[in-house]
Length: 101
Image (cartoon, rainbow, N blue to C red; front, side, top):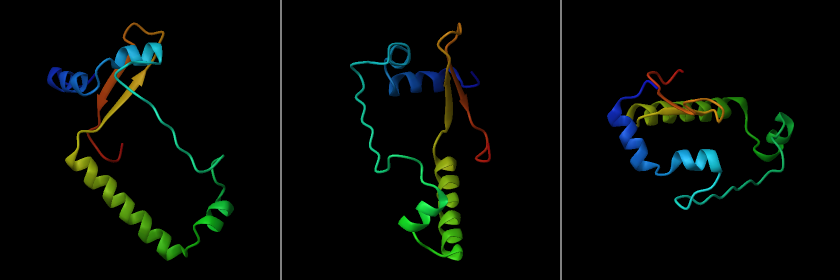
């Protein structure tokens, strides 16, 4: 882990019983819900039928979305967590230093 003890404590407080949830798949601390409006990943042609727009408009939307991602990254601590059930230290949490990672 490349996070500080303080960051680790904050994560533990924000996500109680996380290790049990990862190992057992259930915890009274959490409820789950999944929603999908598609039964598969859309192919490019299917996407164009559902969300038609010209290339210039699409580029503008992508640029706005990238700006939003960079903004959120700059104001929010961003971590990645990897869980490997069969390892001694099953949970690894790392802090991203760059929004380009």
